[in-house]
Length: 431
Ligand SMILES: *Cc1c(COP(=O)(O)O)cnc(C)c1O
Image 1 (cartoon, helix red, strand yellow):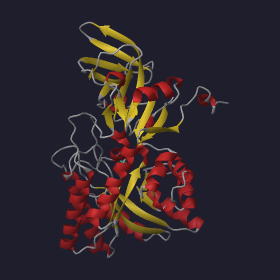
Image 2 (image 1 turned 60 degrees about the vertical axis):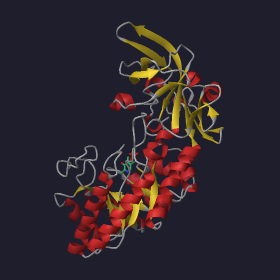
Image 3 (image 1 turned 180 degrees about the vertical axis):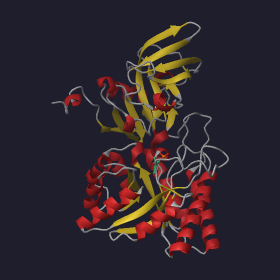
């Protein structure tokens, strides 16, 4: 199975943290997203304890909440001693409404609006990752007007491609994010931020990609960033105290996927950082990391009810479900791989190959093609696994389809954390 939270129970049904998904589908309807709270918390603890164990607790793990944002996720992160990374006024608002401490919020984004920055400054958000020069000016001015100070990290584009096995050190300067290291823009940005009256420059940030399985690119990024810190120290006589290494840790979508354990990540990165700091005569920095997908991705399944099954001999079999790109746009966006199973026939062999089709009026609305599945018929429950990250948070109301309900399960017991959208909810903004 793609997650330890999943099992097959004595009735041959798929279970999430001990809760029978077929019963949950009957009770709450479909489409339905079922998260393992136990799994989410286990992942949070892995990150938090790996910083304790390998880095003397001298760091903070921030959940990148764009992966899945709702009140309950911020509450869980707070209770697990995590910080959160937010990328919009909407995420800040949700975090604050959940009672999340503002000082443990870090604000990202390449075009934060004056209204969003104003909201953050009023709330006392703890860290801003400044992405570009106009934003630096804007944040400095707004902080000045409000009579507050903003703690700033600068987003650096270090030119590392984590998706190739050989790290390509050049050619990656074509990014909408951050200050480019290679061109000298990054050092210029530090020079400028140090002169800002209302900004406290505390560190540098990089984020090298997503769904990364190897640890080598992260070690490499840490070395490049420490090299930059050394350069800042040498040229500007200032040593930033914080190093933010971003997120991007991979999860299992398919059985063959083999991401390294997160605890191993921190063990190796901490070792490299300590060694490099000793070599370069730098203080060991406070480390921030921003895991998103790896906290929630593998800890959710989406349940759908099978409607039509269309067999086109010699071509393919379409299995239509009562959801699709509206609740999970990742396949239509980037042909993302998913494992699927029939929740009420979980013990039967997956010996047919099907195209799982969504219900939107869009030929491309598919969830998976040529995917192994048990023999299914109308009324069966199909589970798509590893839908915890970038599914609900990317969901839309295309075709005026209401968004699914979301459950959290702990120790076999479920609770509703987001109710199902109704047809009337769809009218709430219409005038
Ligand atoms: C998206 C993002 C993350 C989280 O990435 P995951 O792949 O979900 O871990 C972290 N930091 C930044 C800046 C991001 O844009």
